[in-house]
Length: 92
Image (cartoon, rainbow, N blue to C red):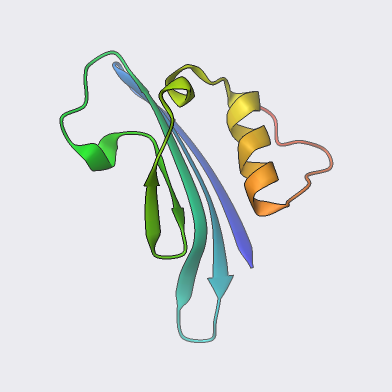
């Protein structure tokens, strides 16, 4: 298993992309992924909106995710994946 925590910030968009992957000898398989986007503009592309992947299934995120802080995103990710960090990864 591998965990990847990505934070990007642009002029009009902040994005958290937190993932868990299963590492095989010949491939990497996404097990879980949480993407939370904060944007000033209304998103036209549904895939650019906040969502999560559980295996191959995609589920839209709740509207409240738009207002989550780093700590709230990380707490939700840890609860969904049953992962504990010690110490917690600091905000970038």
